[in-house]
Structures are given as C-alpha cells and as structure tokens.
Image 1 (cartoon, one colour):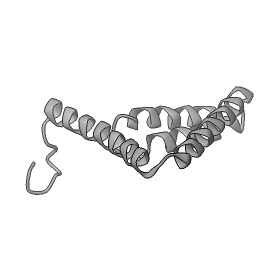
Image 2 (cartoon, rainbow, N blue to C red):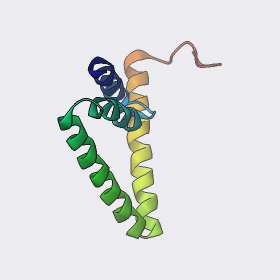
Image 3 (cartoon, rainbow, N blue to C red):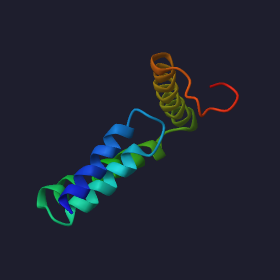
Length: 98
C-alpha cells in the first residue's frame, strides 16, 4: 500500500498547477499512506487542522473578501492554463480550436 499511496500523492502533486482536484488527490494518497505509516497519519492530521482553520477563517470574512479570494484563485488557474497553452499550444482534443 505504501507504493500505491506514494503514486497517488505524486499524481496529486502533478495536478496541482492544473485545473483539477490536486489537493484532494494528495489527501487521498496521504490517507492510504496513513493506513501504514505513523508519519503519514501525523501529516494528514496536521493538514486537516490547517485546512479546517483556513476554512473557518474564510467563513468569518465578508462577502467582498471571499469574492476576492475566489477571483484570486481563478486568476491563478487562468494563468496556469494560459502558460500551458503558450508553452504547448492548444491541445488537439479541444473542439473547434485544436
């Protein structure tokens, strides 16, 4: 299971700069690793606490700040997509463009 967990975490890391569930996949991989390794259990617990604190902080913010955070995340995703298209070109599977 250790090899499977590491493969899932690495897959999540690869997906981080791309639009997609990179963090979710990393947490799933950590969950698999936590079934065997104490260090992974501690890391998963730490990450859960941090995400919980972040979520609570965001909930206490006003609508304007939450919208700004959402737009900032959207801007990062758009920049990554733009950078990928500038680097690799439009994928052939994109209908009507590629």
